Amino acid sequence: MMRSNKGLSLVEIMIAILIFGIGITAAIRTLPVSNRATTRARNLTLATNLAQQKIEELMNLPTNDADLTGGAHNDPDNPVDRIFTRTWVVADNSPIVDMKRVDVTVVWTADGSDNGVSLTTYLTSRR
Image (cartoon, rainbow, N blue to C red; front, side, top):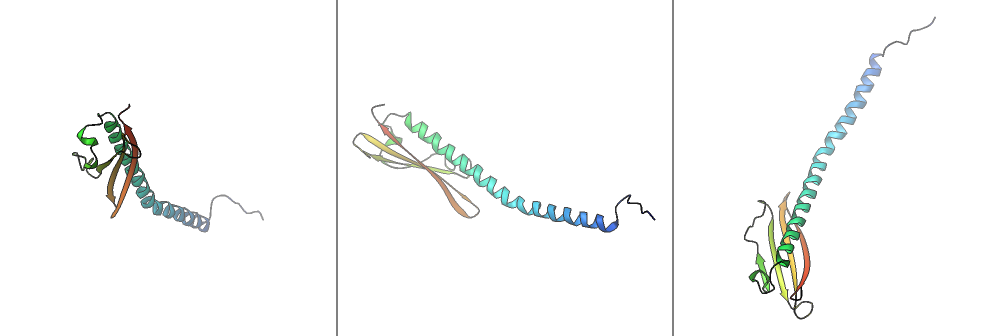
């Protein structure tokens, strides 16, 4: 006698649901990890852009401006975008005479740990 193979048995349906459930569970468990990674990447990009923006501002100032005097400086707009703190340090005559080394640092706290970006440029009065 020939048997009809139309339709699915209950066991086949239960196995398919089990496999689908395992796949969905694995996908859902990766969401918090990917969310943290996305947030970290976004903050890193924003901090780098804030540091680069400050370097561009400082490059357009005359070399005798108060923001380019030797020593540490705090951004008056701190905290920038509510979470970032931007500072810069100017070293006169570094690495050679009539040159200034400018280190701009942007720091923020996320997930209980401190993070930061630091960019360096050199300025001279002969621009």
